[in-house]
Length: 377
Image (cartoon, rainbow, N blue to C red; front, top):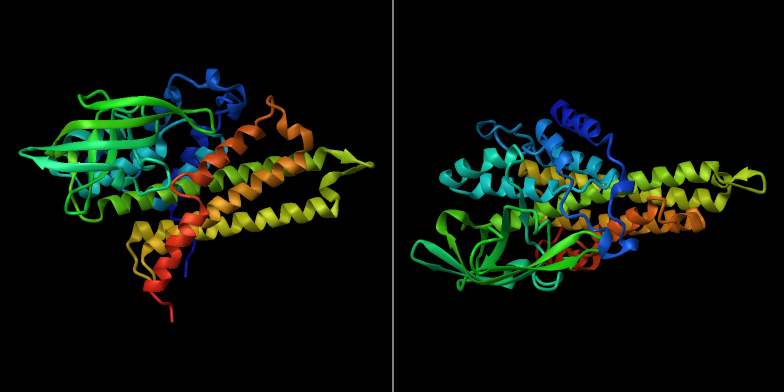
């Protein structure tokens, strides 16, 4: 069995490395410097470079100007982006476009996808619900009135909410099924309130007060939200992997140069054992990520639904990235806390990724429920 990436997937990763080569994580707003460090918008210049390299439209079909690639290709690019803490809504916009392509009507696809793939429209997704712990689709109600849908409720911690042209909002109907509504933040009945993440970035609390959305802009297809949530979760795992790879590389370089008693601290057994443990974490994060991304992109059936693979990947991503940055801080000593050195930024981003779309415990619960209903024996 061939576990290697395809030529197209490798080409996407190589293009991403070229685009991100000039991005310095030192330019990322520092949570240590509080609210005043938050930039007014995301990195628009980098966004333009991603569009020019056709990396915003990876998942779109050729009919919409895309490459027609899969979740694995997107995850390869996202992993590269996280190594430099790239401040762009690459995951959210790519996932939203993919959902519209898979579940939207012809008119919506025609109006939206090519422009979004060129970077002219920015999309994001509200996936945190009211608290970040409850199902996002239960935080908003949706009812149909003539040719419109009416939304009421609130979504918290919406990434890039102040920069996006459209926010994909999951909501539930009286019948109990989920829909996805594309909501413009500046339309009537929509209110944004500032929030801030552990990364120092500005998020948005999105309040919907009888906001009316055209039927064309609502994806009312069974399974649309579950599929989108899976893609967002797998993409978050890819970001955690890229961040972890970079942090372990930084730690290796530092401990190889830092000397105690006339020897590099990397040669000390206690240091080597901790670094080896974190390397094992990274390998587990890789294996579970690519399994989940492959199943999500290929639609391959297994003993468990794809949600089981996604849950396993997020468990390893959440636990692994936390252990990696904690060990890195420990092995860097006081230098790791220096705000002029980027490690503290990676630590803050790691905490954000660990909790995004549910911490490890939440996915362990979901995996337990799956195993109870889908016994492996």
